[in-house]
Length: 375
Image (tube, rainbow, N blue to C red; front, side, top):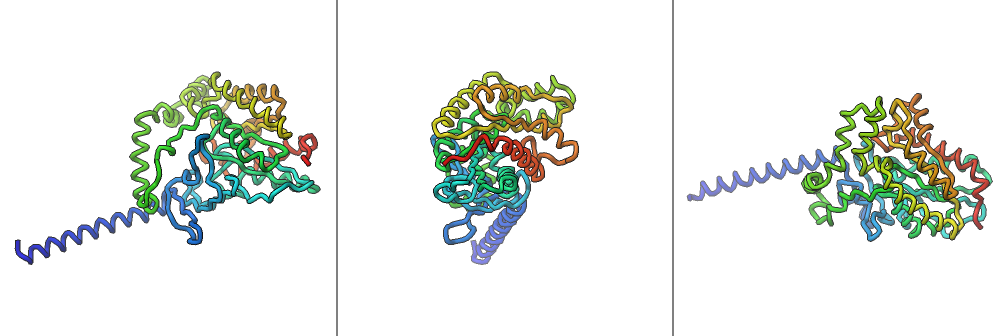
């Protein structure tokens, strides 16, 4: 091979490599403009490394999922709301402001346990129903200092919520613990994000590399077990669940690993067990308990009332002496005047969060004199 031909081959190879690199760079830019990802704040270095999922804010422990304490990130193009969201986690691992040591003499502290509906990573902190509860309560209880604390973590159940209460929640000395109950709270987390493993340098800094890796893992996960767990998301577009109760129950059965768990009798055994633990903690640490039942959107939009899980929950809550609020009738009434209630089948919009905050605050105001303030 002569030198001239060799140089041409090298030049062609260089041009090809440059074209490939330019194409990959273009894909990276497009993904950062359109896909959900996180820009993490590094200590002393501003916003730096990139992740493609809000799961980056979650760590896996022997007791399941917890938020990473002292985190501050920017979530770009959140997959639920499509918005850019600032997320700050305090030293206790809660999405809330840092709490001062000790509690004021006149202070009312309410700890709210829940899943992704409560954590609400797709909204700014002040838009969450937790913060709306605090604002409405403070407006009504002007002679007291009110602190409502968001202890929500995405994709957990009642068991994990009570573990969070034991680990960190009791430290804040709550007068009242509110359990934001969703219909899948008896099931274990389905856990796909936990199978993604630790991210190396390339996955931390390239959204393209992370997206490819995650999609490959997700395809394998769905092939192994996801179809049974997620098949209902296809069925909901095929079944007349809104017009026929029997069909609604069929959809609930298909969703038995998610919100449909509440229609499975065996799931209530786990709930009963956790309520016993919660009752024991409330006695030992002198706090009251309220349970707020959040519906699935299918219950809200159905032409009939299907509230079997809420009625079962009502009886179990009453048996433990807890306060109880069922949001289903309120949100069904709200749909008559508001069109956009949910982003999906469970996450309320900004306006609905505000409405829910007002309903919960009104409910608690009627109980607050009974709750009292611990000294």
